[in-house]
Length: 400
Image (cartoon, rainbow, N blue to C red):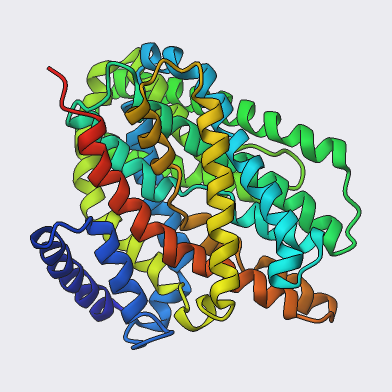
């Protein structure tokens, strides 16, 4: 496996260099590399590496969300709080509802199956969006109005909302007894508990750092280890007590910045260096999950569902921004930032298919849902990334 990792790193660095030369976002090049080297095309990646792909992707996502939290200023968050809250669920509801309505006509699914597909497709990808927003923050683009922070915060909560809705729909679809009220209550509970747990961990961490004053590298290792443990606890307790591990991770960074700014800047700088390898792992492993053959199985119908869903999402996003104080260009930038899909679709796209197989039912609807989910990654991750980079430089000039 180590040889495969070494080859992947070298190939990724070469692709990143080529991407810069042709002015393509690095993550697009890394996604394409993952697709090419993955099991569905050249199959050059070690099976052992692919078997731990999920853990590697989650750890890499943890790194970027920790850094995101360490850059979340309270003042900026207060300014964008209302809009961020609206953006965390309104666009997803618009997109998911429209996909549920049009899927029977275009894909031959039932309305419930269409709703399942809508819940999968409606999630924006923090793995794609957050690195761009951090880059804009570092470049001092849009910081006066808190635009990168707005997108960063909203896209993270968006995933919590969508995944809870998806779990409710999947339970209903497979005949599982679902306590609807408890499941819906799980959305605010998951968000609030995630934030509370993150704050508690942050307090323990900065007091530990105050008392023993470990080197910066050791602080970083402790921070990442705590983040991994939080995600594991979330996995173990999700049946009884829902909480968002990813929000908890961001809350740790936010509270450390609030209480110990020196630690926050130091840790953020270290995480920026770790991100060099984490970015390679995250996007190549996401790419390796993409089966191009499956993606294009639904053809024009699948692409039409995705496009119509995005139009509905854009309408919902614009509605959320009506009283935000943003100008027209800035609103369009937020809309474009809400296009990319990748991590959630790769993680849960196959869940309906697996559930149907386990129940001994026809797997045709599950195959269609998976195909459209994969196609959404193929179409929106590269195009959305290009749009964010290209339009972001025009809509958010560097502030002095």
